[in-house]
Length: 269
Image (cartoon, rainbow, N blue to C red; front, side, top):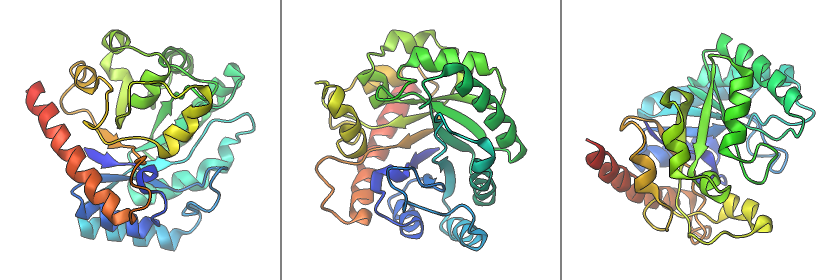
């Protein structure tokens, strides 16, 4: 699966996003179902069953999968029961995974909530992919692996965002050491090698990325450690393209990303 996450063009409503992603050649999309706190209007899909069914029908007609369900962050005040409408929406849409960033500084509570979320999501046949970010309490690959081991639930796995990996000081050697069955899928983008500093991490993540092959991250070495068929989702709100219409951005994103992944998978075969 080569998918594209909603953050790549978050100003596109889900219906527009599906059409543009399919036209760009992506096999799947990530979709915001529960709006995050920093963007409360994007997008309240959960709870609107008619809209969910219409989106699923649209995706089926376009021949594209709704791969990722977002956003399910694990925060200090998270109540898993409040996430159930998002799980229901994800099931209607046919989502395979949900994205959950570790944002609770109290690790024991976060582990308990992840176990509850994993059990709830299993009822909807959706896998919980936990994500570390250097700007959040679960900030590194090692933090995420420790939490994953403590959760110890078969319905959880690791989402590795390459930007977060390298900005948190992660290395290719750490990837080599991970049992591959723990890695659910990859968020792909590129960036300059220079670290933006602590204050620049979130702005870069949300609006300052590059498409794969345009920057200086060691992506080829990274993918050389992974199976050639691992699922990949482009998450790349481009630093130089925010002025373009969402459909145009997705067209450019598809052209660059699909060509890059063809080269990667050719090298892996």
